Amino acid sequence: MTKEGLLARTGGRELKRVVYSADAIATRVREMAGEITGHYRPGDSVLILGLLKGSFIFLSDLVRHIDWPLHLDFIVASSYGAGTTSSGDVKLLYDPTAPIEGRHIILVEDIVDSGNTINRLARALESRSPASIELCALLHKHIADDLVLEPRWVGFDAPQEFLVGYGLDHAEDFRHLPFVASI
Ligand code: IMP
Ligand code: MG
Image (cartoon, rainbow, N blue to C red; front, side):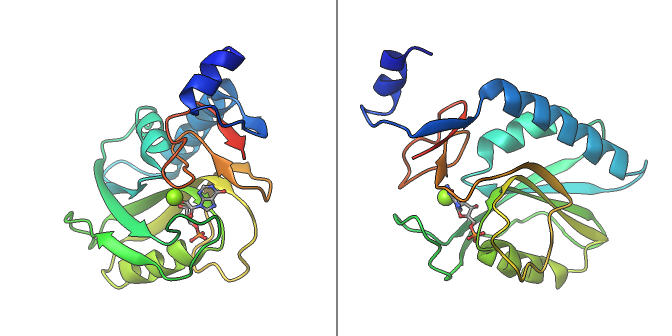
């Protein structure tokens, strides 16, 4: 992408640097899908729950490389508003309608930051008696020290900067960028 092309997409806002290129992400996402495929067995009822909105691109790339039958649903939780730090108050705006009991749940997150979102959701899902719950995160900032659920699959150990693109937003901007950048 040319500099002009990029600035047209961001409305003229400069990004600090590209942290993960589209190619690097594509390679890593395929590897992760392979690791996930290797973790399950024939007959496992796998339900992938994507955390919206941030995981929407990651999720759609990931599931196309998982070699098992699976079902998909979404969770919408919100903790940030328009700021860049977690408010700690996680609201559940959409709860999956798919049955959870006895199924192997894979929660797909864009990024684990404070861990507030995951801690809240993992507890809520545990209470519905799944066969297992695993967390798959594209990015992990390694800030949280009290995670109820450590991600089994992590795309990249992210720098402690505010990241956008490939689904991640700042106040809803930048989600559509094909790479991850810092602002
Ligand atoms: P946590 O609850 O603090 O772990 O944050 C989880 C959610 O906050 C993620 O799913 C993202 O939507 C958002 N978030 C955390 N860090 C970033 C960032 O660096 N860029 C964009 N969104 C972020
Ligand atoms: Mg967000």
